[in-house]
Length: 299
Image 1 (cartoon, rainbow, N blue to C red):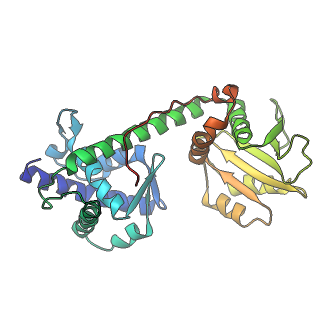
Image 2 (cartoon, rainbow, N blue to C red):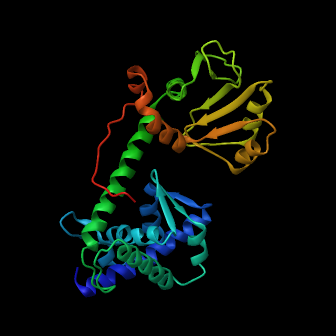
Image 3 (cartoon, rainbow, N blue to C red):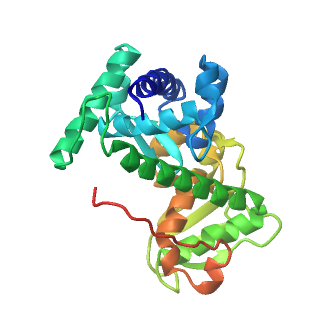
């Protein structure tokens, strides 16, 4: 990368990353990766050069620089990328008191220090050595992971409410629970699944599960309180949605005098991936995954 182009690329990333950090704060601390590019395109002033495709892969320049420098922000501890979502850290929120250029310089310094600790040669800030190739690998992996997560989400969304309910029951079985009751079609009385620690259900706690297949909806506090109200001695509650929960719903769960665990769509997918190898073949086939290995490091 020529020195002049590297400088323009860095300036582009400086403004786009700063804008996304601020947007994460506005949204409460995170942003889905799939919403970042539309947000920047609509809210950040980009030059014609920054919007042009470039390189062998014909990536749009600003998206390439954005991903390239986002790794610096990770190494500085300003952001965390996890399961298709970006999160801003307390350190990231703190540096927003500084100018975009100051934030970029801090991130660059952190990345360079990280490289030195690994005994990898680094050049001047405007003349990277092996940085481009290494970051390209990381960027490609981020994009692949994001695409994979979105593919799984679309598959889950395409399921019917009763198919999603069956997915939740399968996950519980993979976690070692017994699920003698999974509600059939029709009125379920507010409980969709009952899970036991043992086949007879003699041991406590017994888990009463409410399942809502509402991928585009935030579950409210009233629904969480209603689930809490059906619990009896020896029961705990699990609320699983393919969507999200409102802040009031999460407060209702944490403030309840009964144990009530909330799992949203993103966490459900994460848990499905974690316990997938422990599932029966029939359960795996309800949401089949294919594992692919990439060269990485021990960080």
